[in-house]
Image (cartoon, rainbow, N blue to C red):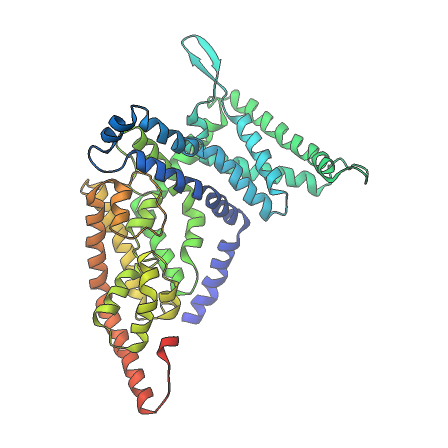
Length: 437
C-alpha cells in the first residue's frame, strides 16, 4: 500500500515542485522577502508593542520620529504589486532561459502601462499614481503581467523576430537591438489591453483583476478550511521525505502574501487588521521548531527518553529546533516514513491552526499585524512581536504544551523500541557508536 502511494504521490509532488510557473512565483516572492523582512524591522521599531514607546521617542527626537521609520517601510509595502511584477518576471525569465534583467524591465513597463496615471481632484485631473494600484491590491495583476510579458517576449525571440547587428558591434549594443522588437511587441500588447479595458465598465485592468480574481481567491484561500488543508499537506509530504512547504507555498503563498500586506497596511494606518490567516500566522502560530511542530518532540526527548540514539540526536537538534530548523529531526530520528511519529507530526500543526484561527477570530488573541519576522524567530518572542500583544505569546505557550502532550505517548513508544534494539545490540556485543547517528 505504502509503495503504491509513493508511486502516485512522489511524481505528482515532483511535478508540482518543478512546474516552471509555480517555481517562478515562489522564487519571485523569495526575491522580495528579504526586503520585506528588513523594512518590517523598521516598522516594528517605529511601532514597538510597548505602551508609551512612540510618545517617548517623539519627545526625545521630535514629531518626525514616526515619519522617518514609515519612509523606510513604505518604500516596499506601498509598491509590492510593482515589485512582484519585476521579481516574478525576473525569476520566470531566468527559468525560461531568457535574460532575467530584460524580463524584469519589460514586465515593469507593462505594469506601468496598465496603471492609472491620473486622479480627479475636484473637477480637475492631475497626473499622479496612487499606491492603491501599485501596492498590495496590485499583486495579482503584477503576477499576470509578469507571466504574460515574458511569454510574449519569448514568443518573439523563439521566432527570431530580432534585429541582428554586424559582428563588429559591441555586445551591449547588439543585445539592446536584439531586445527591440520583442520589447515592442510586449508594449504594443499591453497598450491594446489598456485601450480595451478603458472601453468597458471596469475602466482598468486593475479593477477587472481585483474584482474577478484577487478578491474571490483571497477570500477562499485565507479561510480556515483552506489553511487547515495547507498545513495538513505540508506535513503529509514531509512524511515521505518531500519538503512539503516548498510545494504548498507555490499554490498558497501569493494569497498569504496579499493578506499579509492588507494587515500591514491597516497596522500602519492604526486601524483593526482585517485578516487572521496570513504568512506570519502560518510561520509563527502553526508550527513550532519547524514542520510538524517538532520543538515539542525535542522537549519530550529531553524529558523522558532513555535511548542513547534519541538522546544524542536531541543534543544535536535542540538548538536548531528552537530557531525552526528541524531537518536533523526529520531525517535523523527519522520522521520520514516513521509510522509511529507521523500521527503527532501531522496532528500538531493542524490542531495549532485550528486553535490559533478560532482564538483570533473570536478576539481572544490579537491577529498578526503583517510585520514579517524572520522565520527563525523563536516561539514566545515571535508571538509577541507578530501580534504586538502578550496574548500571542500566551497562545504559543498553550499550543506548545498541548503539542508536548500529544507527542509524549508516541515518543515514549519510539524510545522503548530503540532502547530494546540497543539492548539486543549490547547482548550481541555489537559496537555501535550512537553519537554518529
